[in-house]
Length: 129
Image 1 (tube, rainbow, N blue to C red):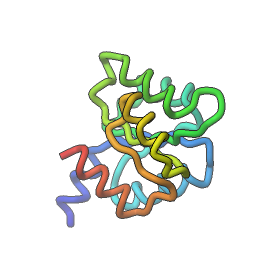
Image 2 (spheres, helix red, strand yellow):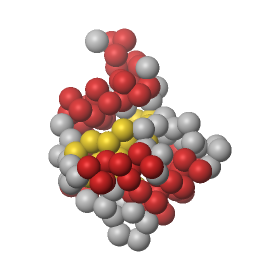
Image 3 (cartoon, rainbow, N blue to C red):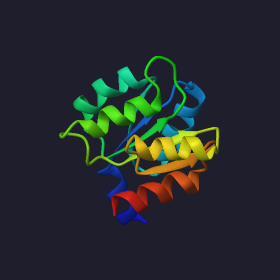
């Protein structure tokens, strides 16, 4: 258990979602597990925070105003400095089109919302090991 917490505490996660409730849920779950969590309310806010905080994994909501998750993912993946960071697209729509669109924009994984504690932790474990 101590080893798992030590591993988590060395990991920085960025959660991008226009829903304060969704951001807070993910933040609470991940912080309880020892992760260092940074949140952003939209794609523009996220782009600044990626440069400042250098997260090791990013969770981004697909449907946000201004700069949506698909656009945000494409911008992250087009930047040589950040393209290796795993990006997980989140959407309330389990729609096949959204899933395909997220892959075309460069996301590493697509999860349907709401995302459970287990899904968050399993995803991080899978993409960062």
